[in-house]
Length: 295
Image (tube, rainbow, N blue to C red):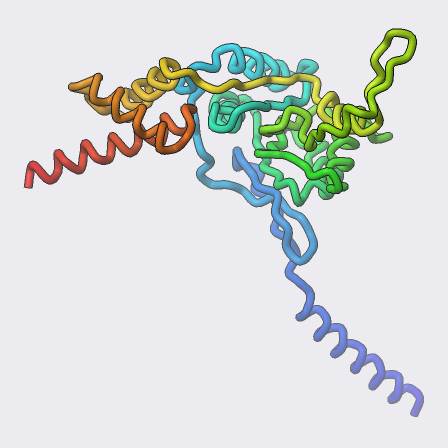
């Protein structure tokens, strides 16, 4: 009798476990290590690497007016790919000047040498220890790409980034670097009141704790690369460069200049991004007029 009761109990427990398993989210897929670019995703509270089959390819030579920035980031990445010491990189400055494009160009140049790019959203920075543990023993070289990164004053997630950069008891892996882009040089908002905490001691300036906390995050990036607004001539040079790249024959350069400046005025910005947008618009309109004329 007791055996029958035990069998019934085990049967009911098995049925219950089957029902619970149906409610659980599926196991995350295994990474496709043949891919060159990845995105860190969350599913059912668990993170996994999602392969990006067609990453945005940008050639380094197509980026104009940022020669010094290209030299710095390219040299650091080349050191990293060759297994030499290299730094985490913070690319900061004016919007639309090529910060994100420069990181993508590194993948285009060095993917065949084992470089891989992993996009990590700011909201997933708490998963950095899990992600780094997943990549640590791989033969490839991984850049964790945090685009348009900034934190509010009460955002605790920046502390995870600090630990990942240089603040954990475990040594950072040799095959992982972090490249971040931001419009803020120190990633955190800076307020006028922060300066009121600055003290003068024996003729030396000692920033207050608020300033020290904000600087302590950005200074953990070993390489700072600054980007600046384009002047008019630099903007126009980028416009004509993109038109050439798109295969557009420019019959009237003065008309293109006038239209490009008008386009930038409407956007309120002269930048590489605006130049690219204008070039695409001009190329599309020109080809549409050619098609319509032929019909």
